[in-house]
Length: 189
Image (cartoon, rainbow, N blue to C red; front, top):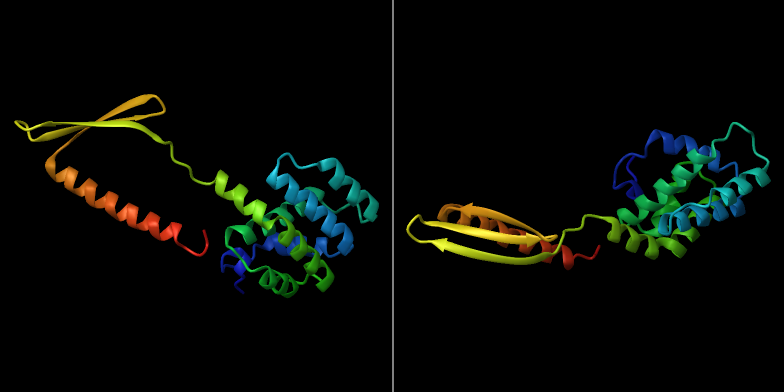
């Protein structure tokens, strides 16, 4: 099956296994664990002492791996934000994976509460480009070459370009600008 919170892909097997474990917690404890995980994702580090206390209070078997449950919760929350999955759809998909209704509702409430902040955090930590500090071009008309100098992070880089290369570079930059404008105007941004 394909799940929207997994980017319209299959749900990883390890997540399926941990969903079974998470369903053994009470829905209240699951929500508390989710809040701890979400807060840890938004403002690291994760408070393992609080998470450990929730597991100790729940009186579950000692074979349950706390870190695996945290990883599962983290995966589901970040994937939901990454793929812009509708929270109602997440609620339905978690039930399809075997999580009880109350537990799925707890997941949904955590995502509703922390989803916006998590999306902002993911945007901030995604691909970033260093700002261009300066540039200059010198054209040698006799050799038919252009010397392009750019300054990034206080380091100067120099490129010697032929007229054909300048044309190709200009076309590529126009395509990149067009793609960037499409992404900026995308409903997912």
